[in-house]
Amino acid sequence: MHLAKYQKGMSATGWLIILLVVGFTLLCLFRMVPAYVDNRYIQEGLLDLSEQGDKIEEMSPNEIRRQVGRFFQMNNVRSQSSKSIEVERLQEKTLVHMNYEVRVPIIYNIDVVMTFNNTWDSSRPYECCKPEAGTESERE
View 1 (tube, rainbow, N blue to C red):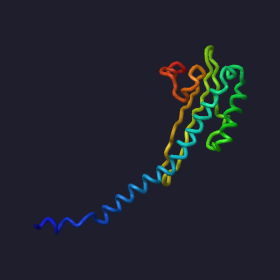
View 2 (cartoon, rainbow, N blue to C red; view 1 turned 120 degrees about the horizontal axis):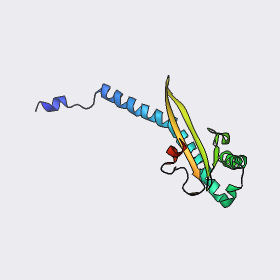
View 3 (tube, rainbow, N blue to C red; view 1 turned 30 degrees about the horizontal axis):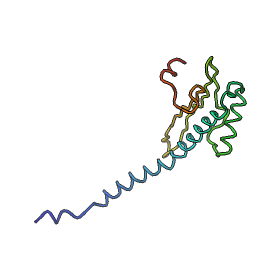
View 4 (cartoon, one colour; view 1 turned 90 degrees about the vertical axis):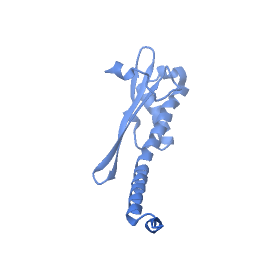
């Protein structure tokens, strides 16, 4: 039984590597999760437009921005402003876009860039922030 002598457990180097990996993962989570939480509130703010019903067609782009801005203020969304909302009027529907990116520093000069594309469509008011298939190619 010579094998039992060599099976003493994990070395200090192994533990150090595991601690570094776990620490880096936690650092990334703590830095990136707030951006995703804010994006969830932004999606809820756009979805809140569906409560307006047919009134949305009569509202001006500034009124739409104000409506969403009030929701952002109540829910403490500070990462984005309602000024970055784009309203696109088409013949049969209204599209409200809030496309933005968040840059979060991780270590030294290493940043994580997260891109969020949120679109509210008045023809599908309760399906917020999921663009229709082919919408991006139609605009280009």
